[in-house]
Length: 307
Image 1 (tube, rainbow, N blue to C red):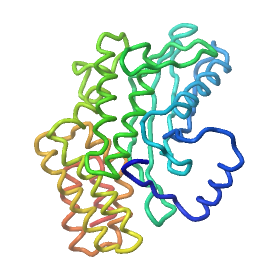
Image 2 (tube, rainbow, N blue to C red):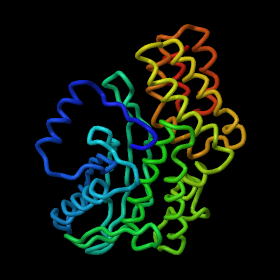
Image 3 (cartoon, rainbow, N blue to C red):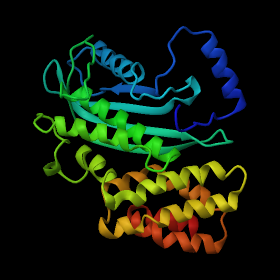
């Protein structure tokens, strides 16, 4: 890759990956290693093969195309998951439900993967004809399915790049924002500012706003100056992680309980507890009131672990 180096999880993984590369003819360079699951347990009037075909199509779309101009080695691909839950068949080819998107980032010198993005999008309404290909052009709106998938591909990339370089994900947020702009006249929900404060429009709009720069700085300092340093200097790493979280107070003062901060803590709350449970009392006392203010839904969990 041109500007950042993703860290392999372990020497064993590197060896296994090299062997895999040597024994496959698949072209390298794709950025995503996306696991896809489509579930429709309550849909009885549609053949299971339709959803199996959808799962295969989404997997090929996410993993089979180039999303950036950077060259990713096989072991550098971003691990992510898409879980699509179909709750209603509106017709034989139109379905609604939700999509849960998660992505992880390797931590230098460890087998651990740090969660970056965790979002559950309930504005998921698509058309799908069994066996069709998913086509996408960033310059135009084709359909809801390709737009939603591409939007989250770019959000995954943007947040991953931000974790390796200060505000390095901007180009990918801008592409996600372009997808939102192209979809303003689409019939599906989740694309417009007027459709609530917790949707695709606001997720990327906030990431590109001045108000949320502390969140983007946190993504870098938390991971690059924190998580990646844990293997060699736990105390400094933990201090940097605490500083990075505390800096987001300025965003919370202006936009309390914002969608982006909710998503950050949805991904990070358990990890923060694991990092700071063994910390000294002054470290925990310094951080605890801040995270309780920014993530009030998890106050009991934080108190139980960090008081």
